Image (cartoon, rainbow, N blue to C red; front, side):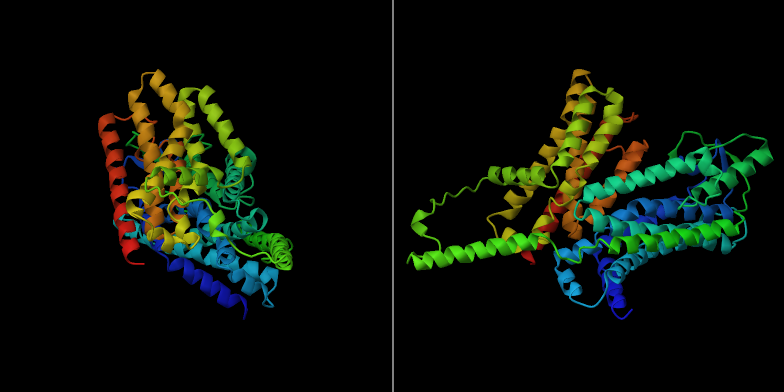
Length: 527
């Protein structure tokens, strides 16, 4: 622990003291408050075929606990899957590699720091859920156990596994962030599919890391017993529905079994096994690239030695260099930024992008517009997240801010390059909407493409990192795929007042552009 504790403490403090973490907490407070909607709200978070529980301590505590678990299981992975990458980028890993700490202890330190970050967010939502009970409670007594037990048996084990999977993903997939997202969310989808299946419902939650199946089973059994219904499924999440009247029932919580509690310990043990297995393959910051670098260095020295033996001058000859041509236009910057976006990441990912782009041409328009297009745009999350942060990440922002008119040339070039890529990806749907006479759809798609790029630029400039945008874009895409109207940035859902919707998105875009410009202006003058 003499080696592990400083790593855990330093990593935890570095994450929690950042502006992006404070913004994440602010967003978490808002989302946690919305877990228990008002009685007259147009949405609900747990709906059993028209039945909804009264807001007693059991319903508020368990719903907020399971919602927190699912929410952090999804976007929490995006928050904490860069611990090892930071040590590589800052070269702190080379110092750690020279210490006696073992691979298992180092990875365990990273896992525990990830875990503490997630528990901090879960603790905030726990406090908010108690406050919400006193605000929206309906005269039922406050029972602390109904709030403690869901977080203890749902969130605590699940987040331990999420933190372990984040470390495992970094060990085996390295800097392939998009591939990490795809693999992790595929695992989550498989897990949720098993939970919703009949065989998953019969396991009493033992093979469910979230505990959702146990909650669904208890709620459906209560309704079927007391109201003579045959409900088998429960809708879960932010469900927007025009139905305002629900049949209310009183649910008193779960009866915890020793089997379920034992399964939580097994899931925690599974997290330890993942870390141990990953430690067997951990590179310990010894990369093959260093071998190639040494070979190139030897070649340079050998070339220099041969030049000395031939009495030839070593170095650059100014006369042989091409003449300097000054170009103060914006086009070279746009071209460079666009090429950086295209060439970023692995080439195989473009095969997936190309497949989805072709599918946009031939799939039914409503499927291409509502599902395939948001997925295709989300696959570019790592490209756009670094659009305005790569200068600081590569420590060249001092040179960039000292360039000729950086605000008038560099920042607009980054935005134009990102928008060009986004519109190029949206082009099949834009053309099909134009051919169908849907002019509103064309404008909405272009508006949405600009919105995503400006979000990446604004959040990147404000926080100095890319994590917040990645989390925001994932939540936005998840909400769009679930057809939540308020998050429909592409305009794929029907709206009562389409011109007003277009003006709202346009106003948000203008606001993001102004915020980005003013913040970058301040940064360039206060280095």
